[in-house]
Each structure stands twice: as structure tokens, then as C-alpha cells.
Figure (cartoon, helix red, strand yellow):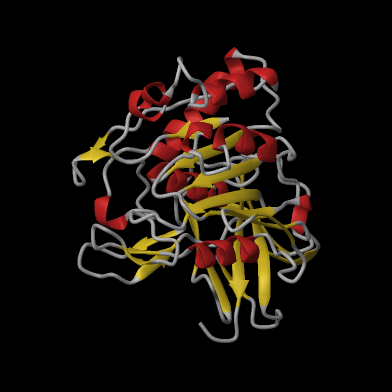
Length: 342
């Protein structure tokens, strides 16, 4: 499981300065839980984003106002290649988690790198960011490429990523927990009327949606007294992230929602647009495309094409997948929404 620290943080400040070797109940419980479950923990270090002036996980689509040249997605994929070649790893059980900006990055990776990660846990993060320093319009992550199990954890006293959204303590517009939940319910094609709840008084509120595509799940945890924190046991929020996130992710294995996708290429330039689309879907790739296949949300093949502009006017409104077979042997899988109106 990858654990991504927050913006401005380092591995030292995120992990080792939070270990309570005297009283216990600190970040050391994350290691103890992982050891007991046979899990390898990976703590990557972000570089300083020159625009922001502090450490920040970078992706141009996630943070358009602080774009840098650092390819953090490529960094993560390279780590996966290296680790799986060096250690005994079950590649169907690679997980991601993160705090704050690391939780933002976690949710972006979960949605945009299909069938690489089996589940994700995002603490004090969000699925949207404002368009620029001066434009506060929220820009959400693109629709997730394939369903994936996700747990989002938010504190009701968080001033950096406000629970109810709006402007944070730095004057930046943020998405609410409800908008983030809706993003993942839509991405996983969940039955939004089918969920279970578990509460500890009014201190801890959990809601779990089990009727989702691809045997996935969406879980939201709301902590009444928590601010912008990764909750350890000794924080007394009655919910311990160090054990809970591992219990959550280990329920799941890597997705297989659309059959036939065995070699997902992530380093080739490949985009589909517009998304949502009304009548024509365009594809842009720097490698020649051999075949385009369109699947419905149940993974059923409904259309085949060989051109980079595909008419979808006959499709009903809803969620679909595009699978592209490239001439170099690689494949891409992307999700899109067919809509009557943008």
C-alpha cells in the first residue's frame, strides 16, 4: 500500500514524527497493522513544487494552477514496476492511500490509472480544485476510468478541506464531502438508495454503499471533532485510520470490469473528448489506433470502430467505457458519459 503524505509535508513529518514510542496510539500502529497482515507499506516523497513553493503531489489535471514538470504519475508507476520486480508482491492487491494533498492525489490515481490499484483510502482530501488562482470555479477530476473501491474520510472541523465545501482558510474553493461522495457513487455506478450506516453517537458517522459495479464499494466516514488530521488512536476521535484503512482495502482485488484488457498503457498520450459527450466522441493518441471498442456499464460490447471520431448519438444517456487497441500492442481503457445536454 502506497501512503502519500500531504502538501508541505515530508515522510519524516507525516510518519516518523507522529510515532508515539512511549504511550502508543500513534502512527506506529500503521506499521504494526501492516506487519500483522503481511502488507508492504511504501512512503514516497514528493518534490518541492516551484510554483507552490512547497512539497506537492503534481498532476496537471488535478492542480492546473500549480503545474510543474514533475511526472508524479510516472514516478508511482515506475515504483510499482521496480517493487514488483524486487519483492514478492500480489499485483492484484496494490492499494493507495493518502492525507490532504496526498488524498487528492490518491483519488486522482484511483480514477485515472485503470485496473492498477485494487482500492483507495483518502483522508482529508477532495476530488476537485479551483480552476486557477483567480478563478474559483471548481474543476473535478475526470470521470473514473473503471470502478474501484474507495473510502473517503473527512473531519467536520477541517478548515483546510471544509466538510461542507466552499472557501477554506487560504481562500481556496473546495468540494464538499457530499460532492466527493457523489463523484465516487457515479464513478462506481452505485445504487445510491442501498447503503448501510454505522455510527458512534454523533461522533463517528459511516455510510457504506455495497451495490456498486465490479464488486466495489464506496464508504464515507465523517468525524465530528476532527480538523485537518490523519486520525491516530491517541487523537481521541474514536476512529483510527492506521487500522481502519487496512481493514477496508484488504477486502478488494484489482478490477476486471471489462474483459480483454490485459495490458493497460499509461505512459502514452491518450485522451478522449468531450466528456460528457452528446453526439460525437473524439480520440487523440500519439500511437496509431488499431481498434476502438465501446462497452456499457455492465461490460457488454456494444460498438466497434476504427476511426478517431465515433458517433454515439444512438446511445442512451449513461456511463460507458472506451477500449482502444493500439498498433504497438498496448491498450487503453477510459470511461465517458453520454449525455443529452452538456
